[in-house]
Image (cartoon, rainbow, N blue to C red; front, side, top):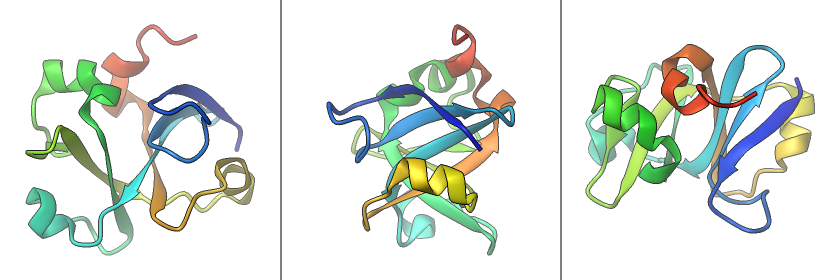
Length: 120
């Protein structure tokens, strides 16, 4: 699976929260791994899901339109917790080179349609 960087909030473009679109018409969200999503955000991911935390600015358009949906849960730290299936594709994981404190999830791109509306 090929990843196309859409936006992130660091200069090295690899080891920080970042949004990608894929060649599979999905979105990959790289963020800080949330060890206890239930207590951090009030969500309970399914047993086969992972939760990540990213700065709210990365999904500002979706927050402005949808508010706190089942996918996006704002925290009191200016971040958002998002849950979904962990990325397991070997090609994508190689591109990501995730640091130990980060994870990546894959969600249908339409769930963040406002964010990707102006992305080619």
